Length: 145
Image (cartoon, rainbow, N blue to C red; front, top):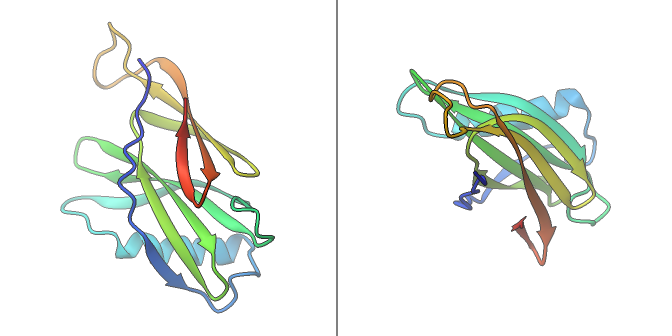
């Protein structure tokens, strides 16, 4: 089973006093502000992992975040790319599927390791390891095949 990425992007701007001075504390501030702004009917928005990289090649550090919308009995994984625009971040969010396990960012290439349901897996316990490959290309986040 190949995972699909739903590119339902939400584009938001988040101000930051020093978008260029990115350390772990600054990233956590940006992420917390973003997740608090995301609506949830039930449950919460939980960060999983992030990486700092210059995804768009402009010489400024960007943030790639994996996070979950947590419901009462399941989670919906998402990836958000925060592009440094100077004093703010432009946030683009893609819906993912499966259970996300790993994030790897190299330049404009983003790889997300996931677990998907196999033909005999119970809904709780996917076992099929897959990868979602994305790339920042032409001003957009594109899923690679």
